[in-house]
Amino acid sequence: MQPVYAYIRVSTDEQAIKGYSQRSQLERIKNYCEYNNIIITEVIFEDYSAKTFNRPEWKRLITKLKFVKNQPSLILFTYWDRFSRNITDAYSMLEQLKIKNVSIQAIEQPIDFSIPESKIMLAIYLATSEVENDKRSRNVSLGMQKARLEGRYIGKAPIGYRNKVTADGHKYIAPHEPEAIIIRDVFKIIVQEKNLPLSDVYKQAVSKGLKCSLTTFYEMLRNPVYCGRIRIPNKDDAETKTIKGNYDDVISLLLFEQVQLKLKKPKHLNSIIRKSINENLVLRGIFECPNCGKTLTGSGSKGRRKKYYYYHCTKGCPYRLSAALLNINFLKFLKNLNVDDVFRESVRKISNDINTNEQETYNYKKSEIARAVEKVVNRNLNAQQLFTRGEIDYDDYNLIKNNCRTSLENYTEQLQTEAIKLISKKQTDKHCDLIINNLADLYESADIITKQKIIRLFFPEKIILVSHQIEELLSDQIKFILGISEFKQNDQEYNQEINDFIKELIFLRHDFNFTELNESIS
View (cartoon, rainbow, N blue to C red):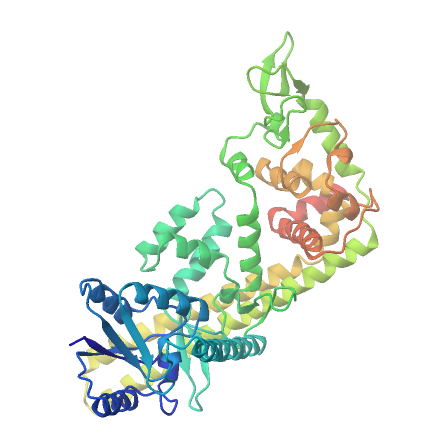
């Protein structure tokens, strides 16, 4: 007697569909077998999608059939969509089963494989299932896209968040402590600690309790969800964009963008900062040799009266150039900068956006502190009531009261610090024009690290030193910004590069002492 296997499959999203329950399928197959005097060898229950045959129970059944050699077997199921919802995979599996001398049959959609014309019906059954599956997938995809456009986060909450459900059944994500605090500190450390490798930041975060792999950590740093933004995937050739989500953020948009700018910097520029930079070789590592394309380094050569510095190629290439000449040309370039009004307006607009985000960050921290203060006050009142009812003694009450007072003082100090920081940032708004108009003065008075930042504004990537004139070495984007060239491109990537340039310029305001600069200018 040939083995007969009853294959019962239902995926999670089909559980509520009438007629697709496991019990209903099993009853129909049993009735079919009783009517045809067939004895079921084994009932196989599968809770998996039919998009592919990579299903645990099906794979186990195929493995078992390999050991039943030269003996015909039969697999029964209710409908052909229980077998497969992919017509290509279905025909491939049918060939494999035929080789193994295994017959299959859908009891509600029977096919007589001995009749060639019946294969047309099989194709219809399989194609119908695939089309239905594609329609369902498309509807799910459109629903998810609509939810994203409404600012809702779809799927499992990322690290630092938890999935929540409101009383009326709406799903959302919310920051989860202490992970959210650790992640916020991570972003701050990356901006504040200029020379700290990301691997060290990751180790610090793990030591504080963050549980994730290094790969997940890198992905987290580039995920806009933490600054309250939802990334809308590219759909129907539309541009990928981000919109504000309807959930609480962990960090400000300003902090997120600062980290993105730092992550985008080429590794060779980060290595320049980590080295001890000679003031006379401030452009070292920026340019490439026009002869061989290698990165130009620099060194000093002792002369009769003083030491002379040169930018030169590595061993084997004779190219070298006076460092003083190139350094002076760069300073002259800064002094001759002529920025048009359109660019100034862009600077003011982005600066206002940044200040708005800083205000939102302050409001968020203010509300956090307010909630913490409310908890402390409630704890103090509760302790007072317990003491009044005689449920705790005076020493315990006094200890709780003193702890609450200390906490309130700390929270008050935090709020004052955040307010002072916000006022300080707002006062620097007027310095944006000062940076543009006096970049040469700022450059001359800045420390070596800030000078490197100014240089990277104009040379974010290595450039071949084909000329001693700085204007001729600039990219088309920088030339357009400075009015040197009329080259203009309207694509998204080009505009993003201009916006990054402006943001870097604005972020420089925190690196200068504007009081001293004003005095020197006046």
